[in-house]
Length: 388
Ligand SMILES: [Zn+2]
View (cartoon, helix red, strand yellow):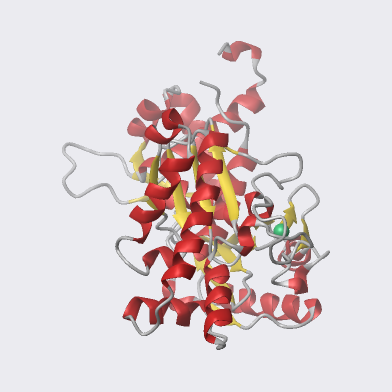
């Protein structure tokens, strides 16, 4: 790239973004290491670091104990001076967490509450909870990330439709919280946010082409292609859960019948078990009882696995990922469950795509997903990506 054709301001922004991404991927680094890892000149790195220290996104940590000679202090994403807040909107319960810029969640300050019936109450609870969390430390608040189920129009920051959590439908919690706290606030569909979290804090570090299938309440798909999160026109890309797989099947929350998410998720399994036993059990209870052997549902489990394999096969054939991560609890019912789904997926997937794809359980949580949404936003808002 011919940097002489780029405006100095733009170059500075690209450098800032490159530094943030390098520290996210590799952890704390000295200025010298940062210069080497980014391939950007030392004076340019130094100027950008000054900006980043002033903005609160970076801070200087101690040099490593075993460093020889006179090591420079290491630069790291802010841990003590600044924080971000994550809001997880979910059907069973909503959560508010705070974290440092490197994604470490402050587990002592997690707040949980049942989703209220009306939107004004939700914003009222959220604003008080976020304020309480912020007051508990001296760190400045740099942003808020919201993970939301359903369809989220990221272009207009609007929760369009959540069949399972209707309180946010046609509202913009991101705009409403931004107005209260005056910090960047971003709302992201939960599967896309999970995909970001796995890349920042989980097993997808360093992967540029991978997918994340969330099969907990609904079925969502987040996809990274060439190092960028697939977005579509307005952030709606990846709604594989509403692919019709049984035209005469159950009514889905979207209004259609037989969508994949009515057949291949934790909640689909809970519904099937309830229909069989006549008892309505929560997903947690179904998973616990099946795992403990207190409940038997081999046909239902087999059915959910078959449909999940159809979904996985579609994701692999469509996007050719190097790894497909799965986020959902029913696969943890037994040690052999994931292996069974992988065998079923193999039968339905194009051989060359399947052979180059690994299928693994995701390790990140929805709390981390909400944090990843805002950290990613702060990073990408810093400037455009440096091309390869
Ligand atoms: Zn649907």
